[in-house]
Image (tube, rainbow, N blue to C red; front, side, top):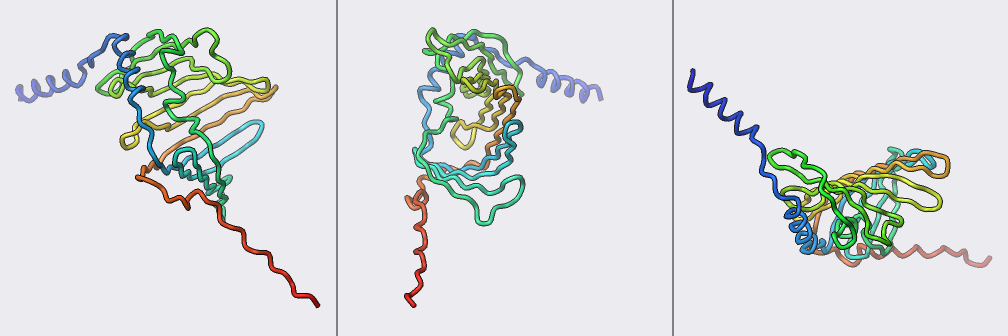
Length: 230
């Protein structure tokens, strides 16, 4: 009995042991290296749901097919109602949520260590982010939490603003297959005198080697029927 209790005590001690903490400057060096080594997927398919409350109320679910700048966007539901047929749009645009576009780079931000955050058996590292002189217009990162295993941003806090609206938000990233992808975004904003809120949830990631070119080609419209002359 005593041996069993001793073994349990030793197990709990190991489970509660503090994880290794690295020097904050070493973490930043690893962070810069990992950002520089990022490889974007050549093609991907994923789903996302978006909800907005405030100026415009929206509840939608989409599936996205992306290859480079080519995007096929299928709207599956609006306000919980399945669309039949679904709405399909085609465009060419960069991925605004890609981690290499959003993550604060040491060349553009001063990153000041704040604290470590326990994350299971390891710790993450939180930094205050201040844009370099001349930066900070529009989308501005204010804080980043660096994952202690991958040394990539797990959480990015930001502000965004224009002449018409200002807001604060948060982006959460995580691993999908071998890539680091967005999982959640939340924004609280004021548009004029009105409050607005947006939430986006991503998931169901797939990374095929390629997508057929026909994925991004709109279907040809059916010919108009003409009546014979009477």
